[in-house]
Amino acid sequence: MCEKARVIVRMLQGCNSMNKLHKIHSHVIVNGLQHHPSIFNNLLRFCAVSVTGDLPYALLLFHNFDSDPSTSAWNSLVRGFSVSSSPLSSLLFYNRMLLSSSSRPDIFTFSFALKACEKLRSIPKCLELHGSIIRSGFPADAIVSTGLVRCYSANGSIEIASKVFDEIPVRDLVSWNAMISCLSHAGLHHHALSMQKRMENEGVRVDAYTLVALLSSCAHVSALNMGVTLHKLACDIDCESSVYVSNALIDMYAKSGSLENAVTVFNGMRKRDVLTWNSMMIGYGVHGHGVEAISFFRKMVTSGVRPNAITFLGLLLGCSHQGLVKEGAEHFQMMSSRFRLSPSVKHYGCMVDLYGRAGQLDKALEMIHASGCGEDPVLWRTLLGSCKIHGNLKLGEVAMKSLVQLKAFNAGDYVLMTSIYSAADDAQGFASMRKMIRRNDLKTTPGWSWIEIGDQVHKFVVDDKMHLEFELIYSELQGVVRRAMVAGYKPEDSNVTGPVLSDRCLGSAFHSEKLAIAYGLMRTPAGTSLRITKNLRVCRDCHSFTKFVSKAFDREIIVRDRVRFHHFAGGLCSCNDYW
Image (cartoon, rainbow, N blue to C red; front, top):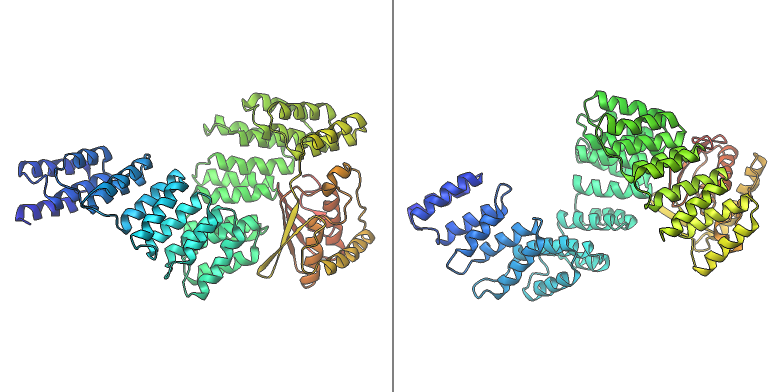
């Protein structure tokens, strides 16, 4: 390489803007070095890859190069487009590279092409790339294999992603983080959490990224014990002070029923961002602490942090669950009037829920019409749920009719409407709903609950016979029911909707949360708190049952249902029977 070329290459390596690059490029042309391979590669790399680069300029350079581009040149374009808004162009350049006579793909080519394929959600291309990787002799490379894991996961092929991961000869931390993140995003939270033990057995230490992904899975399944272990691990590796890890800890504690620990983490943070405040706000909301949420919101604004749409979701949730109608309406108006935030359908849903729970069903209906989101079934479903709570048959029929017209009805909607007809002693309406359920072959969402005992999560469904100890559990449950009845529990049968929906029958003694409670009482020492997660709303009978169990056994029982947390103690619930 001549001295001029060396000088230009050094100038390019120190380049930090397109303006500077244009000057260097002019100097290159003046000296007739525009086709020098090293200079060309450096020019192209900056334009295609740098955050201050220019992809169109990179294309101009590429198309005016009169020699066969090197692998490095092709990689610059494949990489640049893989992270752009046009990832398809990345794969087109990859395909053109395969037709080149002088360049072959290397591990970086495949890594960038897989990133583009991941963004495009193209399983055929992913399979094609996988075949090329095998033929090129790179299947054991950790970088390429990690790209395959991400690509298959993005396309929903978790089993293949896991197989690729298991076949990596030497898995580095990036590979583990990719697999854990993929499992977590796919909703396979228990599988994600099990990876931590595998990492430990293979001598791989977690980092902040690992902890954030694992804590997210803990939050989804309310795995508090595992979350506490991860918190200790964060302290051991000195990354608790990371704002990302602290935010994940707050989210985990709040969603696992330990709001006091979430507050402790928040108070100990030296640096906070809007996500920190939002995590706390959502925590207060799902725990039904509307008054505390409002107070916390004021602290947030006073501290100079500007709230966003998620902030108001948490705030409105808290108001809804505590029946703070006036306060909720004021803050809903404040969104647009003071903070110039446009309410989304989720905010309108909170307002429909707020008015509906409080029995102001006409206002809830007005809110749906005012939202401009009248074609969103969630709003009508929320109204239908409120009509069921307050036994309003007329508006219930309006909501149900809207769901039918939108062709967005499901089995749960029919269950609610059937319950409304049953409560109103409307035999004709009740029969019509049962007929529709049969005609449309609708199935309700199976109810399940899980409870964490030690480091294991046990899952139950209605009338469960799958657990290895089911006979002992049912025997224990019978004794629990008797002690709860002595304490004042009276089984409720008022909402039974008929044999066609027997798995939702409120008079059943074997709902999933009852089985989870019985198992928890069997397998934990006296005085231990029980933490249960349920995928549906707690029914009235189970709510009453859990209150009196907490009294009879002197236990705190924390239940996270689809809507909110219930903290039972001494025969009372934190929701004050308003949920």
